[in-house]
Length: 114
Picture 1 (tube, rainbow, N blue to C red):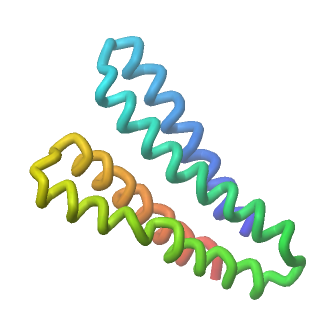
Picture 2: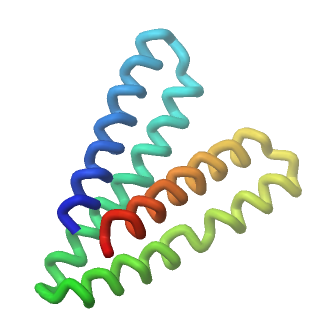
């Protein structure tokens, strides 16, 4: 769990630094997408913290995190499909960023928390 926490916190920090650099270059749209990416990582940092508070048992914490890996982004795929149907490219890109960050969180989870 500690390794996953460190990895996710590093991603949050990386996104924050990227936001600052992009804003300095006046690339506001790109900075906003990085904020979204950072927010996804931040959500799962919070989930890990909640799992830790919930139970001292590693198995229970893992199950809690896995449930939230499914529950939290359940609407993101639906929002992505709806944006595609409407031709809303801004929202589609935003949802794609969320889902890409989610994929990274899932990979890190299954890699680091065995």
